[in-house]
Image (cartoon, rainbow, N blue to C red):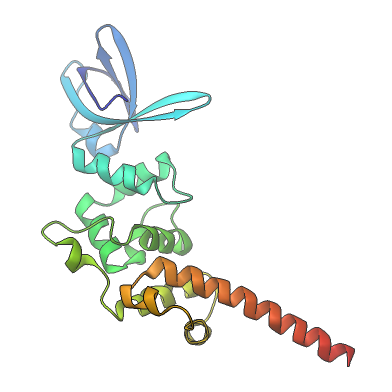
Length: 214
């Protein structure tokens, strides 16, 4: 893995820079904020993440380790690739991303082009407890006993259910979720509720079919 790059700045574009290292020009993708501080001919140092694909090796550069850490954590969310991860860092500061995830503020993430309510809800759910605001302990960042309700309800609403239906689904799916709810496991509760909705929808469909035959 190439974890950092130090060399002379060559050509700069809107979203990338060529850094000359030992006679080799490395193309590094970066945010506009990172690129704005560079000038051709000057020396640059970037923390980097190397993305390996079957048809390409792509370098992404960051002003500091914290940005790289946020980027790599974002890539762990299903549906979030390197370009979208970089877009998040282009719009929001690392601390703002931590606060948005920790507080369940999906709306803050929708400021990023390419992120709608569904993707924002997925990021918040999958990264809960993984991105913690500076100065806040991991224990303090864990959801409170009731905070999961608002987050799960918001996620269900972003998927198309009304607030009333979301509340009814949470009540209907409560059986067997005691441990998840005690831990405030937002992602686990959402998955279990969606499974319940699927089963309940299937039961309702069979009931309607039986009634029509009668």
